Image (cartoon, rainbow, N blue to C red; front, side, top):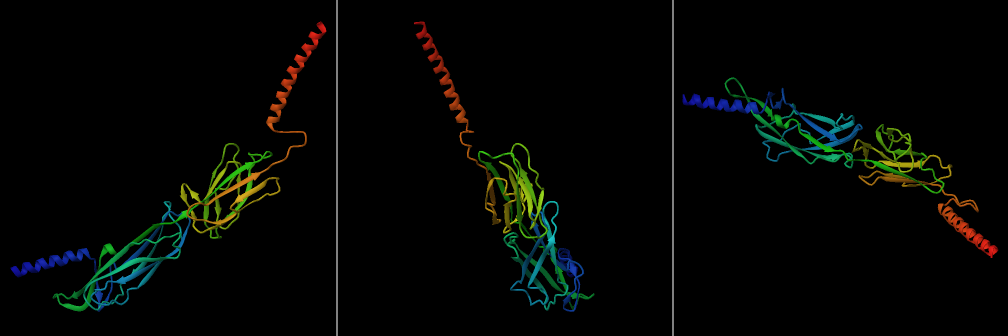
Length: 334
């Protein structure tokens, strides 16, 4: 009875272990996985509005005290974002499956590998996630009906290790443009046209947030396409932000941009600073000024002080005339 109880206890422990590690049958020394025979590497990029193109590389390292060398586990893997469209929350996801059903085990025991993200083709815009994951596989003898090893192995992949996931926020920025109009002949309600080009022709689109000053608003597009010259319009006091999507910065870092005034024959002297550049994490500010000045025609002054002085002289002359007239009248009466 005691032996039977001991056997029952061992059987219960074995059953509990099987529930923790889903069983995967194997023939000979090659584990043929029926369930959980795949490790699904998942990569998430947050904070994007355009399709993501980037490749992440992962290094897979066997634990130094594994029972034996295992044939078939790759040393590196990649997750490729090939224009993956983000969802409504700005999250883009890509996966890579490692099929470990063909791994060759030469000894029973507990095996472990570490998986780490080691490279991104564009670390500036798509930073690495430094998280390292462990993958555990338990290998046991396959037994016949009499509990005797058959020469084959059974491998158990720990379910919690089957879906390692790496996540990071994309680095993004925007361009802000401020306009002023100055000079004694300037029209502060006039809209000036500018042609701006941002980035290369990649098919991405960037939002245009127009922040007009008081008065008549200029017409502006809601988006611009990367690499395509687009006209924006600004008057005195206006501001435009390119790449800002409801508070999220959407321009990639390192994108080139250029801007120029369209009409330069309107009598205004235009100053743009800068006219070209490369987007950085912050400080992508452009200022534009249209200045129109004219000297007054000889003998005519449009300055308000002239009229004030002229009025003062007139008043003084009037009183001087009255006083002089009274003096003449007094002299005549005498």
